[in-house]
Length: 325
Image (tube, rainbow, N blue to C red; front, side):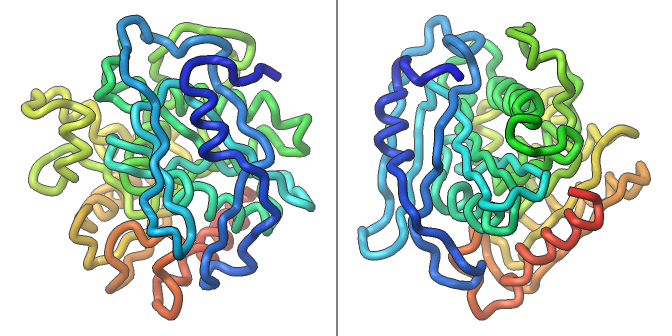
């Protein structure tokens, strides 16, 4: 397996991969600080379109040190998959895609903690650290999708060695990571990078997609303005807005989708999930939507204790099992 040895790798590994035995017994319990057992790069050399990229990858701690960690990565240079192995694999895998408004990637709160919760239930989990569209990558707004497609194909190629079925691979995206997950859900066949190796001969289609308080549409006024600006610029064309609004890209091969949103979300309007659900139903794609009266935005597993929204992880697990994941 390739080792991290390129620019940005040291900061990532030291910032994100110190081994720990901590885990969460339940979604409602105060999160601890879980860490991956391994971090793998997704590209064998520099990512596509890296010529001229000068941004420096950084890892910052946003918590006050009194509670769980809250690290954010900006200017990602080395996209990776952080691995959480279950003690008793159930034969399914989940790739988690944290949010951050396409300006940063929030690894702990929406990545590592949920990955540990799922691993405790038998899922082999991978947390994707993806590149950000504002850093000058050659593919522009497709740079994050390049990483997501490549990640799905790699996990599918690793599946036999990890006791995972290659047709039981789900993705789970949060906020802007939900937009990336939705983009992968609808654009898994898009040719956004040239073949690198045999893994790229495999399908990038997820077998199930979970979108948690996702950014979906790029159409104002319902879009998340910050994510849209980072992805498409200050004044995107009508064509660009349509092309990067996943609700407009739902097709006959779109996989089943599970959606969660809070009605009082002031950052990403609940209409994003409603629009995606309506588009899925219009194409007869299996979908399940849960809208909670309160919960706000970015609740993950940290801000759900004692609230109805605390049900969402169990609801996902039930839906995934129903779909064979």
